[in-house]
Image (tube, rainbow, N blue to C red):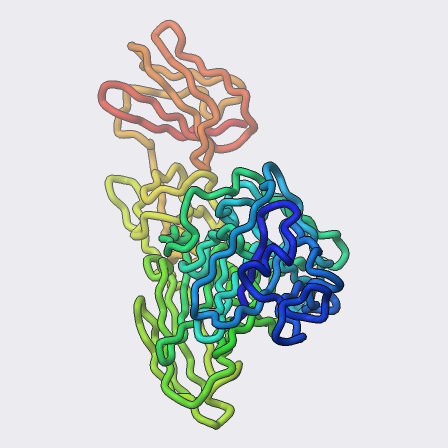
Length: 484
């Protein structure tokens, strides 16, 4: 099988590798047996090129990935190379960017004699997609594992071993791509171990399983992009040697990681390709089921629609009929159901039946800062509650609230003049009494302390209707004040 290698020491040569692994080809010093090339590097636009070209004394480039064909690959082989290791930042040599999914790829190698963690601190990039790809050829002739720093295959989890090569994609043909790794990206972990990943805020993992084989695709609800392919964040699907599962974006790009808009409703096609006739199962897991989003799977071939829940498995048959696979069989529909809030009255306050993600409205306009489940109305009018979740809204029916007469049952205080202009006097103050002047939206405009020696309030506010709140030992008292 092919192994994807890199060499983290300076001036390592092909002849050094030949001490442990035969390297065949037409170059001087080739290993005996055949002249068919067994060692390659990747360079666009040509693609895979045999290496070396002239002699086995040619060096392996630091930070570059190589594909070596290992004969008798079931036998373990240990390669030992001596040389100066790299210390400090390392800038990779990259192929030019491209919009299409066939170009813009670079096969890079871990330049350090230690594992490195993709996506953590220690990477500086420009024009490079967020996803790293690792080829695992021990899995039924090969599959690609993906990781974008937050989401992907947990077998990989972005941990790149020493001596390991990996793929990245440059997406902008008008910008010279750059990628630098720093010492802080080194990981104090064994890259051969399985790793437990920390789930993103809202993710859905879809697995396709058949005869012990698995392929996965990942949806991340984070509002970073729309339903079309985003070359910065979405991870393009790299083809496995067996069957392939991918999400098909609305502009027909197959991706393994899709960043989803936080919308009320979204529909995406699932692509199932390179399959043989047999029984398959789609499995659904992820933290998104802990949120308020619901999923339905539409099977266009069977004309069925079913709700998807956590850990559900949908078993289906693939036959020779082309409608049983491909891009046209499955659609995934994601929706957010928002209940309509209701308003009630308790002790003179308005109470929303929904406690979170709400805003209060007065006569159709949002009241600034009014986001709690209980709101104290200051003026008469039609009040509503609007709930906003995942860019989805639902608004209560209008609730008419009328304030009549004096706003407080406590009649010891009197305001004069009312209407006022620049000054209002609060009669009845005998002890220090805090006050607050609020506008009709409930915003505090002015505060202060009244006393028997100072009962006047200077009014440096625009004309309009306001409410004065007073606080004494018996509680809070409010009075309407008109300023001309």
